[in-house]
Length: 310
Image 1 (cartoon, helix red, strand yellow):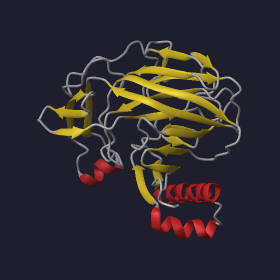
Image 2 (spheres, one colour):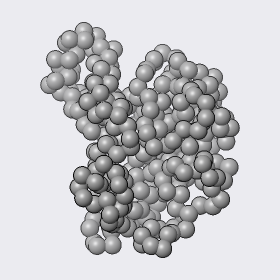
Image 3 (cartoon, one colour):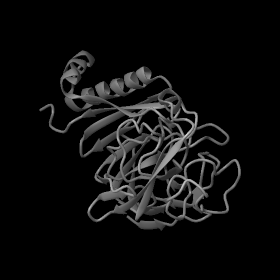
């Protein structure tokens, strides 16, 4: 097993998903990669004013770097469609600063709330050691860092946005995927071509203003394993909070059904239950949570707390 390090530089950064992107590193199952990442917006300095614009990473390629600043892609030898990529999240350490913006553009949420014409910026100082964030107004919140984007490109030609989550991962934005979690993703393309970015120092379920505390990450340590014995159609995770299944769809109700069906399958596998028995017990012990409603494709995650069924 080998430990690799990836720094954010021109050859390792990209702002889209594509199965045609050449890998920046090829590893074996069982290897670990330690990433340092930019914030989602390619910033290279703290975001303290809406105007003038802050400095961002350059050069960026028009049409290819308009999305989240992602590191990768990482190729895993012997990864093939039909297998599952297991991603152990060993450590996530945020940088010293972060930001949150709300309002100022015509999203459905902003228009409904009447805030599409005026924006606000919260500029955060982050204390990674004590897991506390403080903004310019003196508000403090507890930090719970996670990566918003972890995933692989769809098995389709061309350039694909980093904005929506997909069955193969991407902009999942699930706050439960903290250090100590393991994410399981169905592999869509040969060699997997995994990328990571969009660090959040904190975020609530829903991500209702479209941002969390967006921040660079000093250290994101991930270990990758190929699983031949696990066949998934949507992401699954084992987090400190419990087992999690995720569903994505433009319609929030359909996203809920996808996540719920995946949980019933998980209960059947782990406890030998029939579908009907799993549904009855799920109604007693699992929680439906709205992951996010702002990425074009809504996300729902279903949580089965550890030890809830014995």
